[in-house]
Amino acid sequence: MIFSTTFKNAWILSISSALAGSAGTMMMMLGGLIGTDMAPSKIWATAPNALMIIGSAASVIPVNLGMRALGRKHALWLFMALGMLTCWLATVALGANNFLLFCVASLLFGTLTTALMQSRFAAMESVASDARASAASLVMGGGIIAAFLGPEMAVLGANLTALTYQGSFWLSLAIIALAAALLALYTPAQSLHAENQGVSTKTRDLLRSRSFCTAVIGGIVAYAAMSFVMTGTPISMHHIHGYSLIDTKWVIQSHIAAMFLPSFIAPLLFKRLGIRGMMLIGLGCYVATIVGGSLDISVTGFWLQLVLLGVGWNFLFIASTTLLPLTHLPKDNLKAQAVNDFGVFAGAAITAFAAGWAINLLSWQQITLLCAAPVTLMLAVLLWERMAPNPNAAPQGPE
Image (cartoon, one colour):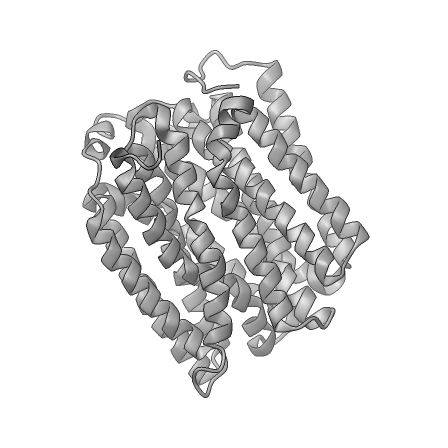
C-alpha cells in the first residue's frame, strides 16, 4: 500500500524531513561534546541539547500559526531557511569560542525540529483515514536517513576546517538546502484550511477526554525518557568512560536507527496489537533499557540499551501520534497538535537539562533507573483510561 501513488506526498515528506532532520541528530551527538569543551562548568555541558528542545517547545505555537497562515509547504520552506541560518550561526559561535552564542544557535535549531515534526501530520492529511498509521510510520521511518547522516556529518566535518566541528555545521547547511529543494515536489492536501475553520474547542475541553490525555502523555513519556538517556550517553561514553568518538558515534547512530527502523513494520503490528498494545510494547522496551543499564556499561552494553530505548520510543510515540487525531474533531487538529507537541518538547527539554545534572552526580545505573518514573506514570495513565472511560471522549481507534 505504501508504494501506491496515494503515498507520493508521504514519501517526499519522509525523505525531505529526514534530510533536514539530520541537523538535529548531529546536534544530539555534538551538543554535549561541544558543551563540555566550551561551557564555563561541566554542569552546563548538556545545555545546548536542552536548549534545542526548549526551542522546539517554545516554537510550537509560532510553527502552528505559520502552518495555518502559509500552509504546510511554504511554512516548511521558511523554517528550513531558518535552519540554514542557524547552521551558519553555529559556525560563527565556534569560531568565536562563544558558548552563549552557540546556545542561541541550539535554541533556534529547535524551531526546525518542531516544523519537521509537523511532516507526520501533513502525511496523514494526504491519505485516507485508514492509511494514516502507515503514512505516519513512513515519515517516521524516513528518520533512518537522519540516524546515519547526522552523526556521519558530525565526524566527517569534525576536522574539515581548522576549528573542530565547524565543518559539521557547513555540511548540515548543505543537506538542509537539499531537503528544501526536494520539498518542491510535495503537493499539500487541500483540507487543512477547511478543517480548521469555525470555533475550535477550548483546550480545557480537549483535556477532558481521557483518550486525548493518553495520547499526549504517551508522547511526553516517550520523548522525556528517551531524551534523558540519550542526552547523557555521549558524555558518559566519551568523557567519563573513555570510549572513542567512533564507538560513541556507532551507539548514537544505532539508537537513532532503532528509533525509526521499526516504523516499517509498525502498521502490521497496529493491526494485530492495536494502539494500546503498541504502547505497552514500547514501555516494555523501556523497562529492558533500565535493566540493561544496571547490568552492563561496556560499549556493547551501551549499544543494546540505546537500541532498546530507540525501539521503545518508536512504538510508544507512533502509537500516541496515531491515537491523537482520533480523540477530537477535525476542526481542532492544529490546536490539538500544538498542545501535544508543546507537552512533548517541554518534557524532553526538562529531562535534557536534568541529564546534565545527573551525569555529574549519579552513576549510569542510577541514571537509567530514574526512567522507571515516567514508565510507571504511563502505565498508570493506561489503567486510568481503561477503568474509567470518559463519556466526552471522541471515538477512539483500535484497542
